Length: 549
Image (cartoon, rainbow, N blue to C red; front, side, top):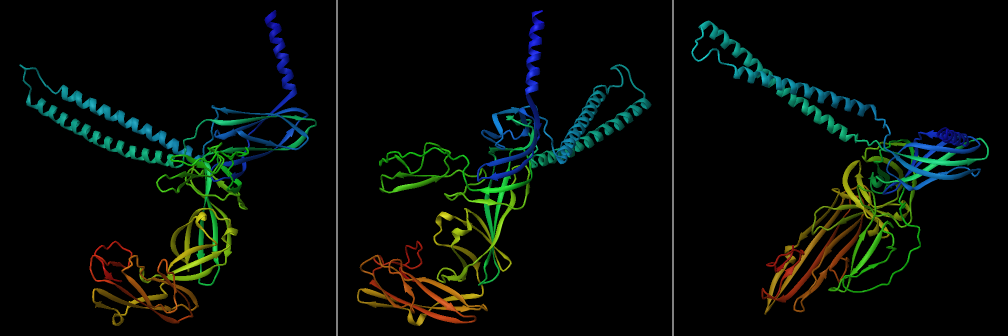
């Protein structure tokens, strides 16, 4: 009787719970993600018919890699959120794509075929062993007739040949099927078909005063996803704006495909602490680390430290940054957000998919550069002013000029000044030649000293149909010995940096125009070979003395 009462009480209790809590199971698809350089915020949005009283909503089939501490629920102000709970369901039946199902079926059939062939091979082997073991036709004292011997010999010959042929063919077929099996497995691996059977479930308990249709938003953070930027820069011709295409490589390895979703790209750090930073004492000494950022939380994004170098007395700079798993990039201190208009499907296969961020025309100043002393070709540069307005992040750049691919470069924002210079490669239509003028170059011995005279002629020609700005760079030697004197004779109105010895001509060339410049200088010093050495090309030539290129 007591047992009956207990069971009756429990039945009444559960009946009351069933009456007071209405449970709804939701298999919600991802509708949007905010991708960070490391991680993502995933969004689900469901319209649910709620009844008056308590409603338990169970979101099933979610990624097992979510950060349960980041789960957030948003709804209207007339609904009270009572609790949120999270658990992992290890028995979830994961739906696989038709392509993966077919590949797995093919793997299974191929494995069976290899098993059957291996069984045949074993039978042939056993039969051959049996024949060879019982090959004796009579006892030691009994003879055998010739006809019987011929008949037995023919049987052994024919059957053993059949067994050998079948063994050879079956072995070859097993090798062939093993190759097919390996290709199928490789394709499955390429499709990242190793899905786990774990899925997250988020349960949300709501209190509702009146029945209503309500929109419920679920958000949470995940790892194993992110994005990095890359750019295409196209220059059609000199004087025209650059076509600047901003793109992103995004990846999703959360085990849940993102189908036709809204994508937002952000440079913020979702793991960054909201705790107020503190400042620590600044100690100087060998091996003591000095930190200029909040080190209380290692997840606080970019950190830059300095370690005092006891030998030089100067700080040694090193840095570390948190970024996407497949690359490391620097991001600006203030977060940049890109709202992508087009919707994208991003499979959960960890592969990189291209997302178009924006396209724009950017004004540029075009300039040619020549260092004919080092390279006979002239280089074209596009200079972008006010590049900060482009919201650039460190990334690779594919550069095109006049429809031709020039090459790949990198944007490193921390190294940029007021301008962003884009090299467009060598321009064969602009020429700069540098010729040694032998009649003005000589060697004279004056007592215990020697005087070397050098003279070069530089010719610049613009074969383009538009005017160009050209910077020609050269140099004169710098004496680091008080016994060696360098005297500048002629630089054709060029600008000389006396510290570095760099010489520059800023030239405006009209279409088809050419100009000439002269560089002349002398070097005077002791003629003893061991006391005077002149290395004009900045190379390690220990035996080079009074010589210039």
